[in-house]
Length: 155
Image (tube, rainbow, N blue to C red; front, side, top):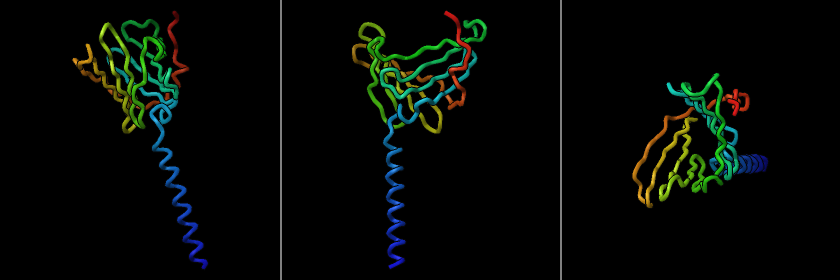
């Protein structure tokens, strides 16, 4: 009887921990990467992207253009999907897709994907509903930088 109780308790613990793991796997991109910051430095500048668990304002950029930005300050660009008519079109565990009209009959679909703490972005350009260009940005690595402490350029 004692062995049966121990076995039943062990099965109960295992079944509870399996449910917890499944809950983690069900988080969407914005829930999973809420507050996460990704970083890239190139010869022309520094980019930080931070994600928020908000489909209307899912991310912001902090950019430093090495040749254009005076005094090593960053430009903060919040990304608000209400301007101009952008919309989050796909939200999965490690992927977010945003569709955004750019010009007359031209739409940009940008896909953000995270794998092994590296953020990749793919840009697909459509004209009149037909894909005419796909390009990729350099990957960004996860960062512990608090972007709220970066020096911002004055307007």
